[in-house]
Length: 366
Ligand code: ADP
Image 1: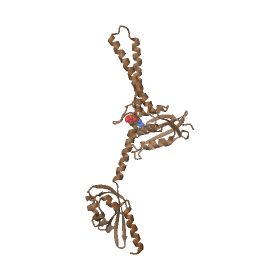
Image 2: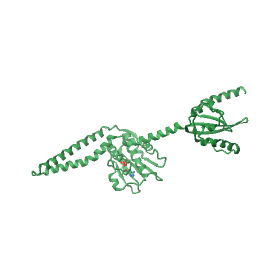
Image 3: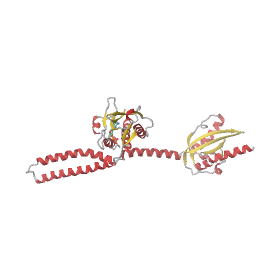
Image 4: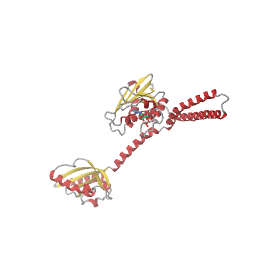
């Protein structure tokens, strides 16, 4: 071997020692010729244990048995089944456990030697990482629906307050109309009902104050970026089956809002739309922002089944849901948030079908 070949050889060795991928070379009989340190880590065997053995020990039985046949087939016919193509296969560690790995195979023919080089990457951690990310995304979506307990309390309070006020008014009327000859127990009962209605209104007032306590400052926000972020999060898991059309008018690009809260509104509206469209072909969410009377109006629509008049009347009530596992608080929270921005949230059934929600937020003046 010449001096320069020595250097080449040493360089190659050093590289094989440090590459993060496992590297296994075999001959045409499937006998392992070299096994680098990364391969030792991946499979749990030392090079000494594995060099000279058939590579099938690194595979679960059912692949291992067929493997010699694969090499043989290739050497005889030249027909490539795996060489040059990366694929995901199962590997087997020394302790017998199996794991998913990405395998790339290359071929070396030189000076009469015919070898195959396998590059191996353990996918266990990557798959685990992907699973964790998917889990986290699901948690974020779930939390964003539940997060603001103060808002939920406030939304329920808003709803309950109206019948309570009516009860109080009717009770006032009854007391004024009570004649002196009313049996004392009936009179007492009417007084009690009145007291309890007042008490319930106090409790509700407290809850609404709780909802307001969490109010946060507004900032001038880039509306398009805000919408894009919220939609990206809402469309997680739809794998491109739902299209998004976004149109922000040039005079509607800056809004004075609590970014997180308005994103929560959008997230709820888009998730509802996605759930209503239920993966139907051509599903699309359209979001349009335009300037109207010093404010910015947002319209979020879908081409799903829409809702019946009966459902529409109850949409914003807390706990009104048509979903088996729905909470029915999303839209009532949305309404409270929109109202705290000085707007109203309305639902429409447009003539072309689907559902359309509209709300407005203050525009940010330069
Ligand atoms: P949840 O989503 O937990 O049911 P919401 O308050 O967000 O609670 O929604 C209440 C109900 O409104 C839903 O159960 C559904 O029936 C209806 N709804 C909301 N958005 C849409 C939509 N885009 N298309 C059809 N129905 C909708």
